[in-house]
Image (cartoon, rainbow, N blue to C red; front, top):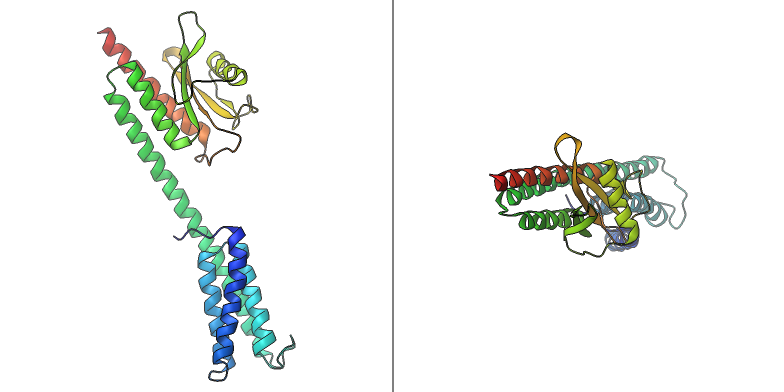
Length: 262
């Protein structure tokens, strides 16, 4: 499915395309019947509905009706219509433009959702594979950070309690944490619940932090994603997806700890 042009480009494109269609219709008007000129405008509306956003598609349909009526329907250079049959043509052009743009929008949304599901499944598979292959804790945590950053954007970080119980960065693409971010991560460690912008807790923090769950309600650490002021496009339901990542990482850490103990 074709990605629609941005609204800033869609509206000028709609106007330019209808103007070009009117110019073409003016060249052939002496050789074809007015009803065939209407089909030329209808074809332009259909084509534009497939590539422009919905608002621009509706604008193109309205412009096509107005231009066709003003320049090509007798009496010319007025919006008066002597033949009432043209009113049905106008209604058809508008209906086709709106219907096709609506259906195209739905198809684009369904395609985007399918792509998102495929991307999530691939990311989870690749994460699980690399976690299983990690020979020691550092490699495991760096693999976790790499995959988290790839899917969520921004900077990913794993924090775990040190010898004195204070949270410390064990892996991360940017290890500099502000006081608000550290407080949010400590809150997650203490309460075992997500915190950050997409949640109800610590919403002023520009990021998302979730616990790494251990056995019997224990929290092994915190997995976080931090983004700049211009937040990137996040996956659908980012809290649940990051929690899924955290569960995979925690399971892999548990297996690694048991393997090391043996």
